[in-house]
Length: 109
Image 1 (tube, rainbow, N blue to C red):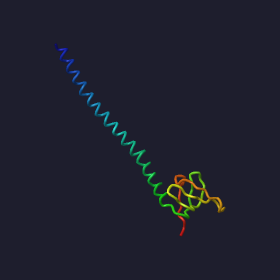
Image 2 (spheres, one colour):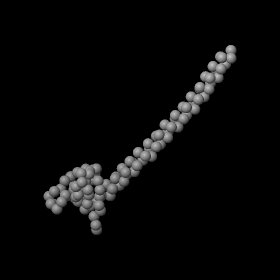
Image 3 (cartoon, rainbow, N blue to C red):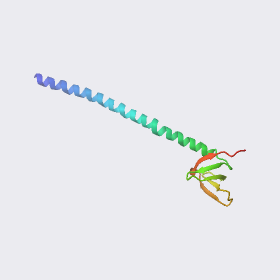
Image 4 (cartoon, rainbow, N blue to C red):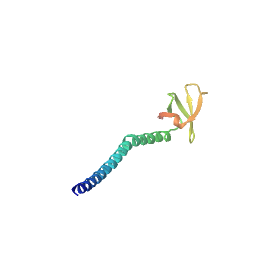
């Protein structure tokens, strides 16, 4: 009879330990998600916001650097596209997406 009672105590102790392990597991998952957010997603969103603000602040006459490394001057800006003039040749005007602009230097007034 004593062995049956000991078995019952062992099962109850295992259930209590399993519950503590479950809570610990959930806390560690939440901590990993928080770390993932603060080290990966948040800085990426900040960078996207900064780029979006830069693209919205572009004006005709600004000097831009494209993602491929070419320098040019903005000639025209539409909703999604820009026309950039490259070099001193006034005939070299290329339409491109705003997303192809990597850097903007404001024109001196």
